[in-house]
Length: 226
Picture (tube, rainbow, N blue to C red):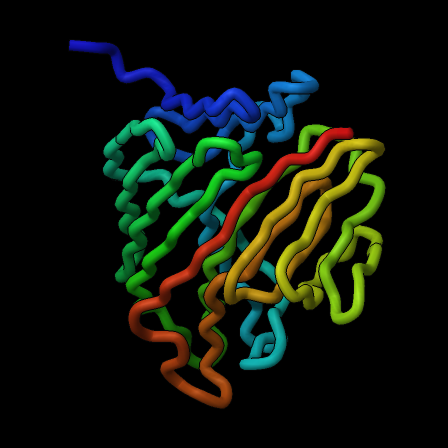
């Protein structure tokens, strides 16, 4: 029998360390430079947030009232192969659940996530609006945030508002960057030294039961040092 230590994925280019209890990403090191990317004491992973009803609708992400990690009663299974190593994770929360396939491929400098979310959250009247997002805190001083837009890229300062991007958002500081990439989500928020990607938001206007059902989402957490 072996001790239940943190889970380490290492492909010779990056080393990713996942918390032994929650399976959240607690360390992401570029092995060429030896630089850590994730803020020590914090983790990257799914967050359940509640937004203000009065400022939330189908087109607007309202003021965030609260936010919590989804780190309770998580099931984790680890696998390792010559081309791909990773985790299979089950995350229950409220009336919903998420299954996450997390992997690190040979030759890759990004940790991949395949999410399958069974979403059953909604709001009524003045109740806070539930929102699911992916949060990644950077350890380095962030100078600006870089977003992929039509015909190029755009630098933006830190702002407490979602901004659009086609495929990625990145927190940039000096010669270092922490990026989130997605195949189907386009609302990024860079603020307070962290980058977030909105995955599901469930306001009750104009649709009283939006987003209910199965959501399949692919994203990646990438590191860059020059």
